[in-house]
Amino acid sequence: MPSNSQRKHTISNKVRKRPGKDLDQIHEDLKPSKAAKLLNQEIDLDLPGDGQFYCIECERYFIDEKTRTDHRKSKLHKNRVRSLKDIPYSIKEAEAAAGHGHYQHVTLKSKVSFDQSE
Image 1 (cartoon, rainbow, N blue to C red):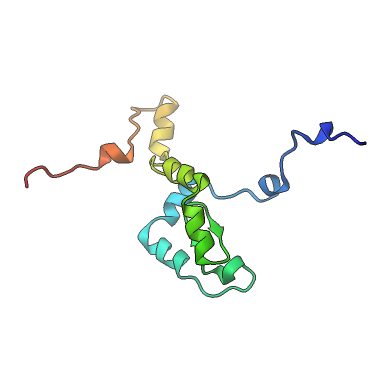
Image 2 (cartoon, rainbow, N blue to C red; image 1 turned 90 degrees about the vertical axis):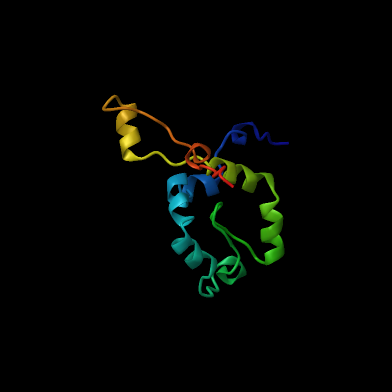
């Protein structure tokens, strides 16, 4: 019987040939104007589910609403949402990290302020 030892550590074709969007590009898609366009796309018969069931965070199309809701309960989706909670690095932050200024990383939690005057 042949051995599969040489195939254990290869990268799948999906990862190698079709890289997905980066997190900063997905942050741009999450803005309300772009999100509305992505969720209400025209019918495209080449896409799964005719392009009507799209997950913005994971940039995936699904065949029906049930599979999309099952996907939203999955660990893959929850990990992607968790990774999108951080604000993507800006050019100013990248220059500061390289030693060209002051560096201060801001997260969404520290940016949100709650009004206690009620």
